[in-house]
Length: 417
Image 1 (cartoon, rainbow, N blue to C red):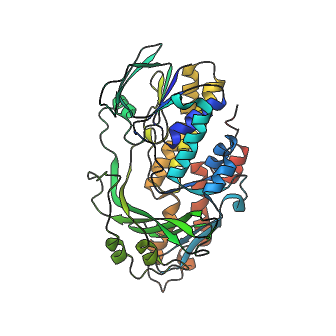
Image 2: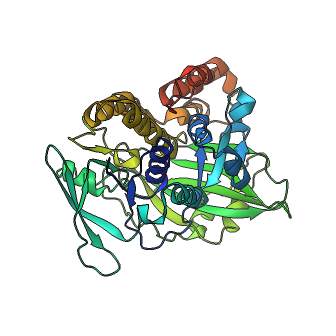
Image 3: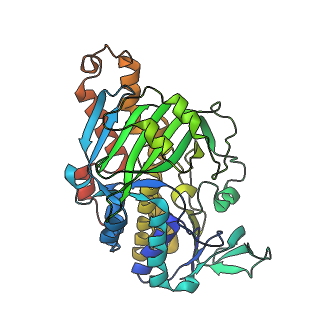
């Protein structure tokens, strides 16, 4: 079977590696000319780590990332809203791992190259168009190094894992337009902290109009120095307006320092953390509406090409990894491409659509919204207006929606045939 994967990011490479594990040999076409470990940190939740573990990557992930043991939510004045164990500390069979996105991608590239051969991962290939008949899909690429058209490629199956600006999705839904922006920008950076400054925890503080998120993504084995990934959410535009989507847009840290004056978080000095960053990048918080259909004939969507979502609840890369594994499973176990893609879409489109909409309503961060609405006055005892049982219900509800309720995950069938 000739399988073309469009996009050599986390989802495309996980798909390629998963297909290789079931005896297939896809080809990955990536527009980037030269791969590099770019980006900042992400959290891989236990249901994603389960999938990467079944690909034999757990020990390598723990070496280059940080197993997270706890999640803590605070108000901006330091009052604790919610705290819960995470990963194996919460009884999961797999850890939650915070990791540098670029290091994860390079690990997947190394593993996919080893499994498939260097020629199966082609760079500088920008997709121009796809055409399909009942029997085959024809793909036209441009060589980004020369600017010249590449010879046409034919495939029996095309998997589009080419991100929120997917060229394949644009061809399937030509009138969809640009991603939807809620007017919030994510100011992201990494800062090096002295040993033992923070533990293996994720820290959330504030509310949707001004938030701080931080978590360690590596620890130097010699010095003990911690690399902390952090995000500051701030409104910078009108909801529904056109986002500034320069993914390398540099931001002025002084804006953050001015806005976060007076924040008091236990054990975390937000101003010092922001000031320690060598660079700050600004990204718009964007998503797209859930689609009624991912699969058209022999072409289907995966990851952000299928369901881009607000980065709330650590589910972006996690859900894409699960897509990759489910897709490979059904391709390997169903009698035809048509039945495989139907099974894949039936399994993955409804839950990811629900996550997209739940994240628009703040997802698990809803605990911060309610705390801010009811208890913004520091003199108010939070327990009197926002009972712990209600906070627990929000946390548990999101786990069920996103597919990582511990019992639910333990009982779910494996995507290894």
